[in-house]
Image (cartoon, rainbow, N blue to C red; front, side, top):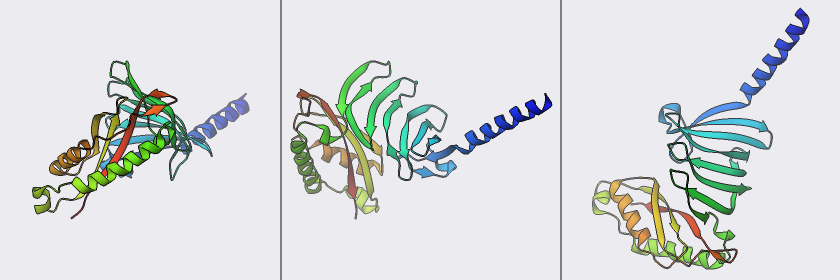
Length: 224
């Protein structure tokens, strides 16, 4: 009996050791890049399921769930399968499916009461009119470079950097819901918002013959 108990204990401890060796916690900044603990805005619990599957949960530093999903590899991270982001009250905010790091099909955006607000595309090449959208994005980039106006106070104080924004183009080709997800400086942020909003030549996004929304991300570079 003692031998059986010893064997069970050994198996359990081996399993526990295996689980611990396959679970890692890392700390992340606002761009979800790894940083030291004291600089972390988020932390990630990463579990290695096998050599081609890693499950993760991202939490705000205070312990509130932010994002869940899977990677098929890490360093670099390759997104695979369903990704779910959460409002701070715990309800689902978005769901997106990935294949080899590319968003596929329609994503879904929910409000903080759990109601679906709209569906959208995250990857331009998924659109029926992808060529028109790629051309529009080239025009948009040229527009930003031409009409950006370096804020005088920021130039005088030597402020520079990259403002990262995201926004949606709705099913009427209209600009919506701009968000800054990496800020640099108040004046630079405001100028980035102004110049991005000033472009209004977006095609209506079409997916499988139907109007839809598309989510876009864009860096606005300020360099002296």
